[in-house]
Image (cartoon, rainbow, N blue to C red; front, top):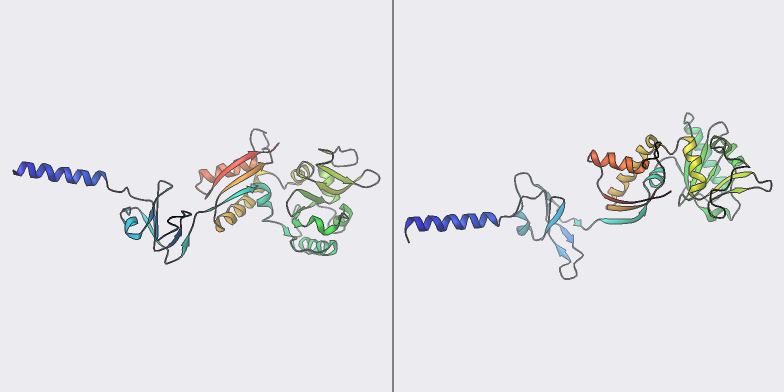
Length: 287
């Protein structure tokens, strides 16, 4: 074989090997216990991420060929790596709100709830409004605390507390007054979303479902875009820390002031633009 033929063959081999070289990865995870969810090959030791997609799952040796000058290599040192969780039902707004305010989880009686609220108000004397969450509906046996009970804790500033699934709420008189909720206020959806009333038709402060309580929340300043920023940050961080890589928002409930979009969507969009949204989000709109 002449020199020219040898050079041509070598050039062909070089080009061929280059064309089959693995592209540089963004992340390479090695030395791990990687659960694949594949029944035939349930475990691997290495995983490669390229262009925001998993491009290789297998051995350390197989993954190393994806390592380039800008690849971040993460040694798992025997730790487990698995597919992220997908939360099938959550809400940015209410899911975020329960990360702030007074947590009433574990309360066993109206007396205990009122004492925890009293301490919360005492420790936060300058708040423009007071917010609590996670009381359990069955605890009261149908005999709920009233606005008068909450008035005994704070009467000159609004107070609202949501139950454990955020569908129901109880507010003091100041909060109801700010939202113009009174005897003549019609129930938003009779029998489904409504105000519990006394024998004279006066709202007791107990509100069932979102259409009843969200206008009260909006009136006291709980539901504007600025107020959602901190809860949204806590909510997203909480999901991310617990391995949630995608969630379905089952209802963006609070329209923006111009009514052209929803505040939750605006908060998510801004975080995505800033590179601070570590998960995928699918959303429904709730009117």
